[in-house]
Length: 51
Image 1 (cartoon, rainbow, N blue to C red):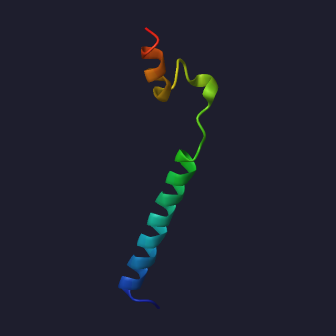
Image 2: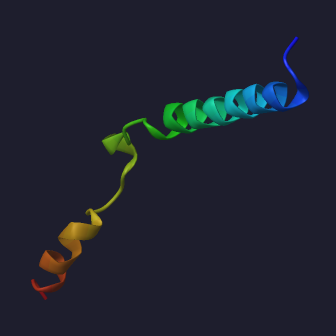
Image 3: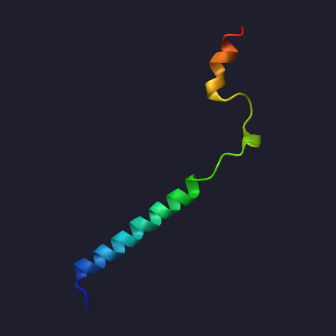
C-alpha cells in the first residue's frame, strides 16, 4: 500500500493533467469567421488612412 504522500501526489497530478486537457480542448477551437462582423483589428489602420 502506497503512503499518503504518494497518493496525494498521484491525485494532484491527475487533477492538473485533467485541467490542462480541458483547457486545451476548450481553447483550441478555431474562430468561426462568419460570426466576426466588421474588419479585423489589423485592418483598422488601413481603413483610418482612407479618410
